[in-house]
Image 1 (spheres, rainbow, N blue to C red):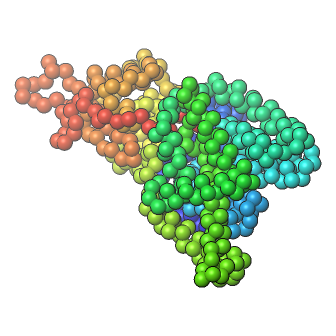
Image 2 (cartoon, rainbow, N blue to C red):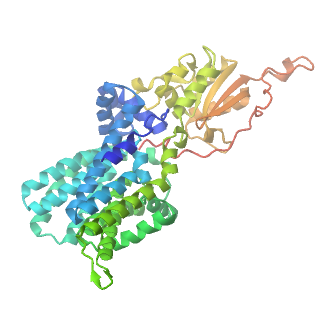
Image 3 (tube, one colour):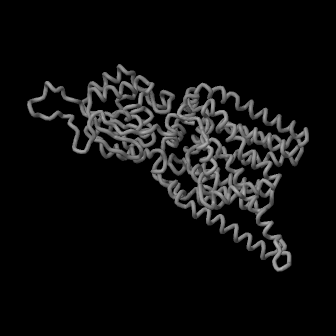
Amino acid sequence: MAVMLAIGLWGLDRGGMWGDESVTFQVAQRTVPQIWRLLHDVDAVHGLYYLFMHAVLTVHPGEVVLRLPSVCAATATAGLVAALGVRLAGPRVGLGAGLLYAITPMTGHYAQEGRSYALVAAGVAGATLLLLRAVEAAAARAWWPYGTVLAPTCLLHELAVLVLCAHALTLALLRVPRAVWSGWGRAAGVVVLVLLPLVWVSQGQSGQVAWLVTPGWDRAGRLVRNFSPGPDGVAFWGSLLLMTVGLRTWRLAAVALPLLLVPPGILMTVSQARPLFHDRYVLYSLAGASLLVTAGAGRVAGALGRLRFDGRRVRVGGRQVRALLGVTGVLALTAAFVQQLPVHRQDRSAAHRPDNLAVVSALALRQTRPGDPVLFVPSVGRLAALAYPKGFRQVRDIALRESAPRSGTLWGREATPAELRHRLASVDRVWTVAEAYALDPRWSPRDPAERTKLAVLAEEFTVREEHARGGVILRLHVRKVPAGSLAAGAAPVGTPAAGAPPAGVAPVGAPPAGVGGRR
């Protein structure tokens, strides 16, 4: 837990939020009635998390405080994984599993994310430990803690409910008596009943994950590498080999293997018909990989301790052997962490996230003049102004009709296409804050207002300046002057400056991985 806490706190203030974090930040600062209104139309799946973060950010609305709950949750998860290892295979396996979980880059990434995934992983690890305690207790009342932990965990993110399938397989592999099945069934039934209203509401908001694609073998391979302490080399292949050996520790494998395989397997299978898969949705399955790897290492260490040297048998319990194995384990974990140190460092940079809204706000503050009109293309780009309003206080949001908190939306309600044309007709210059993919001529938005923005800009304006920062492009558009009104040899006001792209030419970008789907 100390190692996980140190890794989580390292570089926590990376100097900028990205899109999904900014949603947490600005929604959590609304009033409870405003949050409740929002959840009726969007992001119901994150409703409990937003209410929790509302209380957290009341203490201090800042980036570090935004991410601290995830750091604490990851720290707790490392301790719970260690506790699982101790209960299933002994102290050395438990200690190794907790440490391996802590140093895995995927853990560190989501430990520093202002979203719910690290909290969900902690809840699943805690529920798995309580599952084992309830099985051993063989008493009906022992299932109440299990259900009490798992229900809010599933409310934090509904796809955590897949762990029930993993736990069912664990009980089957352990061949528990009928009374245990009965107790687990009642607890699981309560969890499902609690979750049903959220599932019903979120089904009407499924358009939020329309950006997800059908996962193939490449996504499965990437998930395997993310679950490893290293994506390639000795750390990767060594961990796969040790996981295979760890399957021989049957009781541990009966818990870890279903946790590792069942939730991702079900989600990938369902996603062949309806894409729902993303690595972060099954972060909690990573605990199974850490347990299997260290169980395999424990078996290898035990086998080495039983080797005969010069005709004599070396006892596993001997101090020299235990010291040697302990030093070897520490060196192996240290080597795995050092190998992935560049990945950890990269994660501590805001530039490594999909976008950096702090940089976008700072750029707008430098380039715009007081009173300048600003147009966000598409409207999700307004997240930069909501997360970092300082850079946009001097400008005028020309398309905004109703603010995000008042309208019960994530980034506000905009004017109709007719109103947009009327508003843009009254200005001779306008700044656009645009996502890279929105400037691709092949992009055809469904929203009529977004199509109107692009059409008016192309028909009536030309580009004079362009600046790219933080994954977002800031452009100054000036109104075209009709050719008939120009004096002979005069240059139009909207002629692009040297080095600026001509009107109509836009860089080709790809839609972002998270923006447009707030799950």
